[in-house]
Amino acid sequence: MRNAIGRLGAAFALVGCAALPSGAQELTGGDGFMYVGTYAADVHVISEEDFSVVARIPAEAGIPGGLLATPDGSRLVAPTIDYEWVEIFDVAERRSIDRFTLTERNAKMRVRAMAVHPDGRHAVIMARRYQKLRDRWDIGDMELFLFDMEGKERLQDVPWPGGAVQETRGSFGFSSDGSQFYFFTDEVHIYDTESYEEVDSWDYSGALDEGMGDFRFGFTTTPREEPDWYAGFFRVSEDIQDRSVIGFARANPIERRVEAKVLGPAEMGPQGSFALAPDRSMAYALRQEVGNYQLWAIDLETAQARHVVFEGRPRMSLEVSSNGRYLYIYAAGNTVDVYDAGTLELRHTIDLDADMTIGRLWILPAR
Amino acid sequence: MRRIKAINQKAARIEQYVAQTRPAPVSPDTGEVEDELEVVGLESGQPSGPEIPFGCTLMFSPGWETDSGGGTAGLCQPVERDLFDCHLGCFWPAQVPDQLNNAADWTSKCAAAQKDWRKLDLVFP
Image 1 (cartoon, each protein chain N blue to C red):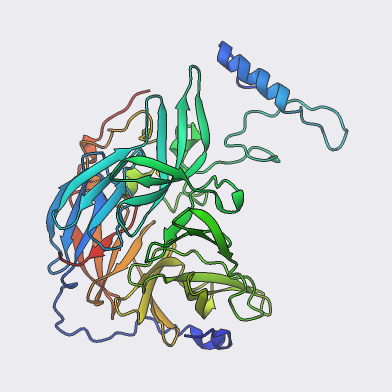
Image 2: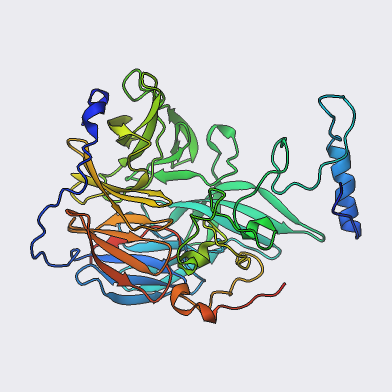
């Protein structure tokens, strides 16, 4: 995949919904399972085979918030929605196996972000301390530290990238072999996980073709990507026509490579909820505006995109089924809508007994 | 015009602290010291006037009704659809209890708001 600014004019193939024949296609998303945290204080397990809820894993620490899957997919790690506990679920046994809190007497510690090391035992946690004093609460700075989830022990502080304390929720993660830790800001700050000292940084702002301006990228976790690759949308300002354009990119902090393609003008294209098909040939995305909800399908080889306008709702998220045939639109409420990935038409609605909490719906293989 | 008056020692100390750390506003036209502005919600930096905050429970303003764009068209439809996340990232045309500090269990009898919102706890301050 190469940069393709020259294709800007032809990039959006706004052909509406190019109805691919779905025939009598069986309504099954594959043989995986969906996992989503709910306000019933459990994790719902939904079979992709027939879209039924096959298990509800009770949480013991509280209502699970955003789920994180460990890199090997064997466990789910979930900070609770009050940010004070972190609960660990075993995927194969479908039960809660451990939990910890950093809150102490008169000092709440709220976990705002975390990344789990590939060893499944350690995590880097970003948290803020709220100390109750005699007449007030003292709100501390955000803290970044390495934590042993089995020993339930704070091992060491992790220096802030560039020495600057981050006051908002940050984005960070580990390399697939666990040897490096990345903190994503306008640069990628690279830490060695032996010492958790910042050893290098990667200024990727000039990674695009000359004339496209600074490249800014979210480095959002992309489950279907190759190890150490992140995929998603980016926006750049195109000076010649004085407009903002949107494209998709893959970035690899280890190889320091960026592969990008421009899709078209940002004001009419997809906005977010980028989700990859299992074979990485297609990506899907949403545009969410009041009265204007769009579902997009993007061919990643040709950078051609098509979309349908559909009856959406505020705050949706998107994922692709294990077999790539269906799209799951979830979040905000108690339903998962199943759309045909070819026709982009609604095929089924999965009705849950509980509202989903904020966070990702994970699809993991049967274990 | 001052609309809030300190009535206990802690509030008086806050007034004293603010008076010491924040200089009185000076008119750019006349250079004279102006009356203090009324309380500004979620103030940050040097506002040119009252800043309009968005959201519901963060506002300390019962009845505040707005979506993330300042209107009402983007509110969740039906309103129960995203009721539980109002205190985090979404907006609803009413106050929902403070789930973080004071009413952690207000959703405990109602897992699916659209189905059984009548079971929600009422929380009185």
